[in-house]
Length: 236
Image (cartoon, rainbow, N blue to C red; front, top):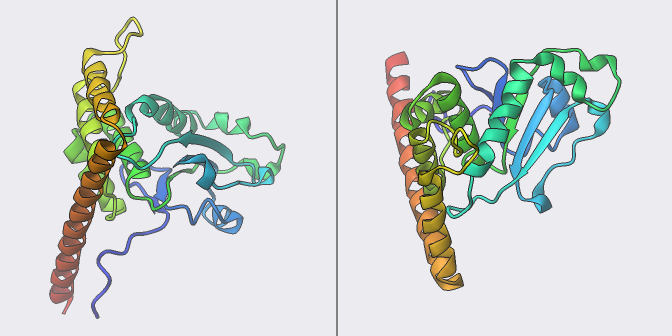
């Protein structure tokens, strides 16, 4: 029987980092599913109007980072705080006591869920960035590893460019004196130049990004469908 090769677990546990998960908005929008999966920390990467509301009595530590899935959005500026949030949860489990509710149910295995709307671009970018920094991986290697857990991870081309740049900056946009590194300043200057072109030109850039992402998404889907068929042939 042929399986849907493009299906991804939701939430998906990142194989290389026990306790780290990625999903779309479905899981954090459902208190029942959050409890079912034992989620203790949630990192939301969305716009404010779309963010899920997590009931305080669930004893879940929730961090919200406002960012749009736009090729011109600056995700580099958020990577340090996002990675620290994950590290503080996974490497210092006692920090789970930061939850505001004194509830005996708070004492459980730490599970960090990173999500955006579809669990593809924004959350994918942060998970890939975290793997890059924690495991000292290249962007390509980290993306490949993340996709082992959630095959549909597909970053918009702007985020992909920024993560490649983040690697070149040794995973930090600031130098030892806290000043922005030259590579980051140069990227911001190019980005600001595109924004300064006006709405028409900016929309052209966004349209190009959407077309590029759709093409990569389609190619990824075809690749996984072919792999699924090959796996079925082997099983038969």
